[in-house]
Image (cartoon, rainbow, N blue to C red; front, side, top):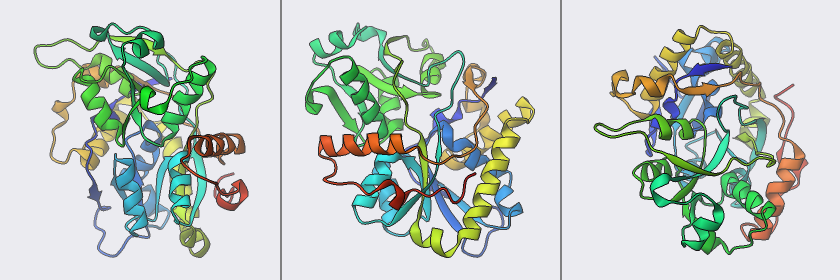
Length: 337
Protein backbone atom coordinates (compact mmCIF):
# COMPACT_ATOMS: atom_id res chain seq x y z
CA UNK A 1 0.00 0.00 0.00
CA UNK A 2 1.43 3.37 -0.99
CA UNK A 3 0.52 7.03 -0.73
CA UNK A 4 -0.30 9.00 -3.88
CA UNK A 5 -1.83 12.25 -5.04
CA UNK A 6 -5.51 12.97 -4.54
CA UNK A 7 -5.81 15.05 -7.67
CA UNK A 8 -9.05 13.43 -8.78
CA UNK A 9 -10.84 15.55 -6.21
CA UNK A 10 -9.69 18.62 -8.13
CA UNK A 11 -11.68 17.99 -11.29
CA UNK A 12 -14.05 20.55 -12.78
CA UNK A 13 -17.58 19.90 -14.02
CA UNK A 14 -17.12 20.70 -17.67
CA UNK A 15 -16.11 18.80 -20.77
CA UNK A 16 -12.54 19.20 -21.96
CA UNK A 17 -11.09 17.41 -24.96
CA UNK A 18 -7.42 16.53 -24.69
CA UNK A 19 -6.03 15.11 -27.95
CA UNK A 20 -3.06 12.80 -27.84
CA UNK A 21 0.20 14.65 -28.60
CA UNK A 22 0.83 15.17 -32.29
CA UNK A 23 -2.46 13.63 -33.40
CA UNK A 24 -3.69 15.01 -36.72
CA UNK A 25 -5.93 12.22 -37.98
CA UNK A 26 -9.09 11.05 -36.25
CA UNK A 27 -8.29 8.83 -33.27
CA UNK A 28 -9.06 5.15 -33.27
CA UNK A 29 -11.02 5.57 -30.03
CA UNK A 30 -12.59 8.49 -28.16
CA UNK A 31 -13.13 7.54 -24.53
CA UNK A 32 -14.59 9.52 -21.63
CA UNK A 33 -13.53 9.19 -17.99
CA UNK A 34 -15.40 10.41 -14.90
CA UNK A 35 -13.51 11.77 -11.86
CA UNK A 36 -13.01 8.49 -10.01
CA UNK A 37 -9.93 6.68 -8.78
CA UNK A 38 -10.70 3.72 -11.06
CA UNK A 39 -10.03 5.92 -14.09
CA UNK A 40 -6.43 6.72 -13.22
CA UNK A 41 -4.86 3.74 -15.08
CA UNK A 42 -6.59 4.65 -18.35
CA UNK A 43 -5.68 8.32 -17.98
CA UNK A 44 -2.05 7.45 -17.32
CA UNK A 45 -1.96 4.97 -20.20
CA UNK A 46 -2.71 7.97 -22.39
CA UNK A 47 -0.11 10.18 -20.68
CA UNK A 48 2.55 7.50 -20.92
CA UNK A 49 1.67 6.97 -24.61
CA UNK A 50 1.07 3.27 -23.99
CA UNK A 51 -1.85 3.31 -26.41
CA UNK A 52 0.46 4.61 -29.13
CA UNK A 53 2.97 1.89 -28.29
CA UNK A 54 0.20 -0.64 -28.83
CA UNK A 55 -0.47 0.90 -32.24
CA UNK A 56 -3.67 2.87 -31.59
CA UNK A 57 -4.62 6.52 -31.05
CA UNK A 58 -6.89 7.16 -28.06
CA UNK A 59 -8.43 10.52 -27.24
CA UNK A 60 -9.38 10.92 -23.59
CA UNK A 61 -12.19 13.26 -22.53
CA UNK A 62 -12.99 14.20 -18.95
CA UNK A 63 -16.71 14.55 -18.16
CA UNK A 64 -17.93 14.67 -14.57
CA UNK A 65 -21.67 15.05 -15.21
CA UNK A 66 -23.35 11.70 -15.83
CA UNK A 67 -26.02 13.10 -18.14
CA UNK A 68 -23.46 15.04 -20.21
CA UNK A 69 -21.43 11.86 -20.62
CA UNK A 70 -24.46 9.92 -21.83
CA UNK A 71 -25.39 12.75 -24.19
CA UNK A 72 -21.91 12.73 -25.69
CA UNK A 73 -22.18 8.98 -26.21
CA UNK A 74 -25.66 9.17 -27.73
CA UNK A 75 -24.62 11.87 -30.23
CA UNK A 76 -21.68 9.84 -31.47
CA UNK A 77 -18.94 11.95 -29.89
CA UNK A 78 -17.69 9.00 -27.85
CA UNK A 79 -16.80 5.41 -28.73
CA UNK A 80 -16.81 4.32 -25.12
CA UNK A 81 -16.58 5.42 -21.52
CA UNK A 82 -16.01 4.32 -17.98
CA UNK A 83 -19.24 4.61 -16.00
CA UNK A 84 -21.29 2.72 -13.45
CA UNK A 85 -23.54 -0.25 -14.12
CA UNK A 86 -26.71 1.78 -13.64
CA UNK A 87 -25.65 4.35 -16.21
CA UNK A 88 -24.70 1.62 -18.71
CA UNK A 89 -28.12 -0.01 -18.35
CA UNK A 90 -29.93 3.34 -18.59
CA UNK A 91 -28.09 4.16 -21.82
CA UNK A 92 -28.83 0.71 -23.24
CA UNK A 93 -32.47 1.14 -22.27
CA UNK A 94 -32.50 4.48 -24.08
CA UNK A 95 -31.56 2.71 -27.30
CA UNK A 96 -27.77 2.78 -27.33
CA UNK A 97 -26.25 -0.52 -28.47
CA UNK A 98 -23.48 -0.89 -25.91
CA UNK A 99 -21.31 -3.73 -24.65
CA UNK A 100 -19.84 -3.89 -21.15
CA UNK A 101 -16.28 -4.95 -21.89
CA UNK A 102 -14.77 -4.93 -18.39
CA UNK A 103 -15.18 -3.99 -14.75
CA UNK A 104 -12.86 -2.21 -12.33
CA UNK A 105 -13.48 -3.01 -8.68
CA UNK A 106 -13.37 -0.20 -6.10
CA UNK A 107 -9.83 -0.16 -4.69
CA UNK A 108 -9.44 -1.76 -1.27
CA UNK A 109 -7.52 0.70 0.89
CA UNK A 110 -5.82 0.46 4.26
CA UNK A 111 -6.21 3.47 6.50
CA UNK A 112 -9.21 4.95 4.70
CA UNK A 113 -12.73 4.00 3.74
CA UNK A 114 -13.71 3.14 0.17
CA UNK A 115 -17.10 4.79 0.60
CA UNK A 116 -18.81 6.61 3.45
CA UNK A 117 -21.89 8.68 4.26
CA UNK A 118 -20.70 11.79 6.07
CA UNK A 119 -21.92 15.10 7.47
CA UNK A 120 -20.03 18.31 8.37
CA UNK A 121 -19.76 18.40 12.14
CA UNK A 122 -21.49 21.78 12.29
CA UNK A 123 -24.81 20.17 11.32
CA UNK A 124 -24.67 18.00 14.48
CA UNK A 125 -25.76 14.90 12.57
CA UNK A 126 -24.09 11.74 13.82
CA UNK A 127 -26.61 9.11 12.66
CA UNK A 128 -29.22 8.46 10.01
CA UNK A 129 -31.92 8.94 12.62
CA UNK A 130 -30.56 12.39 13.42
CA UNK A 131 -30.39 13.26 9.73
CA UNK A 132 -33.91 12.17 8.85
CA UNK A 133 -35.40 13.58 12.06
CA UNK A 134 -33.92 16.95 11.07
CA UNK A 135 -35.42 16.66 7.60
CA UNK A 136 -32.00 16.36 6.00
CA UNK A 137 -31.60 14.38 2.80
CA UNK A 138 -28.54 12.56 1.47
CA UNK A 139 -26.96 14.27 -1.53
CA UNK A 140 -26.18 11.69 -4.19
CA UNK A 141 -26.00 11.17 -7.94
CA UNK A 142 -29.39 10.46 -9.49
CA UNK A 143 -29.86 6.99 -11.02
CA UNK A 144 -26.39 5.78 -10.13
CA UNK A 145 -24.64 2.88 -8.47
CA UNK A 146 -23.95 5.27 -5.59
CA UNK A 147 -27.69 5.71 -5.08
CA UNK A 148 -28.17 1.94 -5.36
CA UNK A 149 -25.52 1.26 -2.72
CA UNK A 150 -26.99 3.81 -0.31
CA UNK A 151 -30.39 2.22 -0.87
CA UNK A 152 -28.97 -1.22 -0.08
CA UNK A 153 -27.33 0.16 3.06
CA UNK A 154 -30.52 1.82 4.29
CA UNK A 155 -32.59 -1.29 3.58
CA UNK A 156 -30.12 -3.35 5.62
CA UNK A 157 -30.69 -0.90 8.48
CA UNK A 158 -34.50 -1.18 8.11
CA UNK A 159 -35.05 2.33 6.77
CA UNK A 160 -37.99 2.46 4.37
CA UNK A 161 -38.25 6.08 3.24
CA UNK A 162 -39.56 7.51 0.01
CA UNK A 163 -36.77 8.68 -2.33
CA UNK A 164 -38.03 12.27 -2.12
CA UNK A 165 -37.54 12.17 1.65
CA UNK A 166 -34.23 10.32 1.45
CA UNK A 167 -32.20 11.98 -1.30
CA UNK A 168 -31.21 15.32 -2.74
CA UNK A 169 -30.44 14.32 -6.32
CA UNK A 170 -27.60 15.69 -8.43
CA UNK A 171 -25.98 14.53 -11.68
CA UNK A 172 -22.40 15.43 -10.82
CA UNK A 173 -20.43 14.08 -7.86
CA UNK A 174 -17.88 16.88 -8.17
CA UNK A 175 -20.59 19.47 -7.74
CA UNK A 176 -21.79 17.63 -4.65
CA UNK A 177 -18.26 17.70 -3.25
CA UNK A 178 -17.89 21.43 -3.94
CA UNK A 179 -21.15 22.33 -2.18
CA UNK A 180 -20.50 19.86 0.62
CA UNK A 181 -17.03 21.32 1.18
CA UNK A 182 -18.65 24.74 1.47
CA UNK A 183 -20.91 23.21 4.15
CA UNK A 184 -24.01 23.89 2.08
CA UNK A 185 -25.10 20.24 2.12
CA UNK A 186 -25.81 18.43 5.40
CA UNK A 187 -25.25 14.83 4.33
CA UNK A 188 -23.59 13.13 1.34
CA UNK A 189 -21.82 9.92 0.33
CA UNK A 190 -18.32 9.98 -1.15
CA UNK A 191 -15.70 7.45 -2.22
CA UNK A 192 -12.00 8.04 -1.83
CA UNK A 193 -10.13 10.24 -2.56
CA UNK A 194 -12.98 12.69 -1.95
CA UNK A 195 -13.19 11.76 1.72
CA UNK A 196 -9.54 12.40 2.46
CA UNK A 197 -9.46 15.57 0.39
CA UNK A 198 -12.47 17.02 2.20
CA UNK A 199 -10.89 16.35 5.60
CA UNK A 200 -7.38 17.46 4.61
CA UNK A 201 -7.77 20.58 2.49
CA UNK A 202 -7.70 23.79 4.52
CA UNK A 203 -8.91 26.99 2.81
CA UNK A 204 -6.86 30.15 3.31
CA UNK A 205 -7.39 31.29 6.88
CA UNK A 206 -9.50 28.23 7.66
CA UNK A 207 -9.24 24.68 8.93
CA UNK A 208 -9.91 21.31 7.30
CA UNK A 209 -13.50 20.11 7.43
CA UNK A 210 -14.46 17.94 10.40
CA UNK A 211 -16.94 15.20 9.60
CA UNK A 212 -19.33 12.91 11.38
CA UNK A 213 -19.32 9.50 9.72
CA UNK A 214 -22.78 7.95 9.51
CA UNK A 215 -21.69 4.76 7.77
CA UNK A 216 -18.70 3.21 6.01
CA UNK A 217 -20.85 0.62 4.19
CA UNK A 218 -19.55 -2.31 6.20
CA UNK A 219 -21.06 -5.50 4.82
CA UNK A 220 -22.26 -3.84 1.59
CA UNK A 221 -20.79 -5.31 -1.58
CA UNK A 222 -19.67 -2.28 -3.60
CA UNK A 223 -20.34 -2.31 -7.33
CA UNK A 224 -17.40 -1.86 -9.73
CA UNK A 225 -17.10 0.74 -12.45
CA UNK A 226 -17.47 -0.63 -15.97
CA UNK A 227 -15.98 0.21 -19.36
CA UNK A 228 -18.52 0.20 -22.19
CA UNK A 229 -18.05 0.54 -25.93
CA UNK A 230 -20.44 0.81 -28.82
CA UNK A 231 -21.25 -2.62 -30.20
CA UNK A 232 -20.10 -1.56 -33.66
CA UNK A 233 -16.64 -0.88 -32.22
CA UNK A 234 -16.59 -4.24 -30.47
CA UNK A 235 -17.72 -6.11 -33.58
CA UNK A 236 -15.83 -4.22 -36.28
CA UNK A 237 -12.61 -3.23 -34.51
CA UNK A 238 -11.81 -5.92 -31.93
CA UNK A 239 -8.09 -5.53 -32.59
CA UNK A 240 -8.32 -1.89 -31.49
CA UNK A 241 -9.95 -2.90 -28.22
CA UNK A 242 -7.37 -5.65 -27.71
CA UNK A 243 -4.69 -2.96 -28.00
CA UNK A 244 -6.65 -0.65 -25.68
CA UNK A 245 -6.77 -3.32 -22.99
CA UNK A 246 -3.14 -4.27 -23.48
CA UNK A 247 -2.18 -0.65 -22.76
CA UNK A 248 -4.67 -0.47 -19.86
CA UNK A 249 -3.08 -3.52 -18.21
CA UNK A 250 0.44 -2.20 -18.84
CA UNK A 251 -0.50 1.06 -17.18
CA UNK A 252 -1.67 -0.78 -14.06
CA UNK A 253 1.54 -2.79 -13.95
CA UNK A 254 3.58 0.40 -14.24
CA UNK A 255 1.55 2.19 -11.56
CA UNK A 256 2.11 -0.71 -9.20
CA UNK A 257 5.89 -0.68 -9.59
CA UNK A 258 6.90 2.90 -10.47
CA UNK A 259 8.76 5.15 -8.03
CA UNK A 260 6.27 7.11 -5.96
CA UNK A 261 7.76 10.52 -6.72
CA UNK A 262 7.62 9.90 -10.45
CA UNK A 263 4.07 8.60 -10.24
CA UNK A 264 3.04 11.60 -8.16
CA UNK A 265 4.47 13.99 -10.72
CA UNK A 266 2.84 12.40 -13.75
CA UNK A 267 -0.51 11.97 -11.98
CA UNK A 268 -0.66 15.68 -11.16
CA UNK A 269 0.25 16.64 -14.72
CA UNK A 270 -2.39 14.30 -16.12
CA UNK A 271 -5.21 15.50 -13.89
CA UNK A 272 -4.43 19.17 -14.42
CA UNK A 273 -4.16 18.75 -18.20
CA UNK A 274 -7.50 16.95 -18.34
CA UNK A 275 -9.51 19.10 -15.98
CA UNK A 276 -7.61 22.25 -14.98
CA UNK A 277 -5.71 23.42 -18.07
CA UNK A 278 -3.18 26.10 -17.19
CA UNK A 279 -3.41 25.57 -13.44
CA UNK A 280 -0.05 25.30 -11.63
CA UNK A 281 0.86 22.32 -9.50
CA UNK A 282 1.31 24.74 -6.61
CA UNK A 283 -2.49 25.09 -6.53
CA UNK A 284 -2.67 21.65 -4.89
CA UNK A 285 -1.69 21.80 -1.19
CA UNK A 286 1.16 19.47 -0.29
CA UNK A 287 -0.70 18.07 2.69
CA UNK A 288 -3.42 16.88 0.31
CA UNK A 289 -0.91 15.29 -2.04
CA UNK A 290 0.67 13.34 0.78
CA UNK A 291 -2.46 12.18 2.53
CA UNK A 292 -4.45 10.02 0.13
CA UNK A 293 -3.82 6.31 0.11
CA UNK A 294 -4.11 4.36 -3.13
CA UNK A 295 -3.77 0.57 -3.28
CA UNK A 296 -2.22 -1.70 -5.80
CA UNK A 297 -4.64 -1.65 -8.72
CA UNK A 298 -6.09 -4.89 -10.02
CA UNK A 299 -6.34 -5.59 -13.76
CA UNK A 300 -9.71 -5.17 -15.48
CA UNK A 301 -12.04 -8.12 -15.06
CA UNK A 302 -15.40 -9.38 -16.31
CA UNK A 303 -18.41 -7.80 -14.60
CA UNK A 304 -19.83 -10.26 -12.08
CA UNK A 305 -23.37 -11.37 -12.92
CA UNK A 306 -24.43 -10.88 -9.28
CA UNK A 307 -23.62 -7.17 -9.47
CA UNK A 308 -25.41 -6.90 -12.81
CA UNK A 309 -28.50 -8.69 -11.49
CA UNK A 310 -28.56 -6.70 -8.26
CA UNK A 311 -28.45 -3.35 -10.04
CA UNK A 312 -31.00 -4.52 -12.63
CA UNK A 313 -33.49 -5.62 -9.97
CA UNK A 314 -33.07 -2.37 -8.08
CA UNK A 315 -33.63 -0.27 -11.23
CA UNK A 316 -36.90 -2.08 -11.92
CA UNK A 317 -37.97 -1.85 -8.28
CA UNK A 318 -37.31 1.89 -8.26
CA UNK A 319 -39.07 2.43 -11.58
CA UNK A 320 -35.94 3.53 -13.41
CA UNK A 321 -36.48 0.74 -15.95
CA UNK A 322 -39.37 -1.51 -16.89
CA UNK A 323 -36.97 -4.21 -18.06
CA UNK A 324 -33.22 -4.68 -18.42
CA UNK A 325 -31.24 -6.73 -20.95
CA UNK A 326 -29.97 -10.20 -20.25
CA UNK A 327 -26.46 -10.33 -18.83
CA UNK A 328 -25.07 -12.42 -21.70
CA UNK A 329 -26.48 -10.02 -24.27
CA UNK A 330 -24.50 -7.00 -23.07
CA UNK A 331 -21.49 -8.33 -21.15
CA UNK A 332 -18.50 -9.86 -22.93
CA UNK A 333 -15.39 -11.59 -21.52
CA UNK A 334 -13.64 -11.17 -24.85
CA UNK A 335 -11.07 -8.55 -23.88
CA UNK A 336 -10.07 -9.54 -20.34
CA UNK A 337 -8.46 -12.78 -19.18
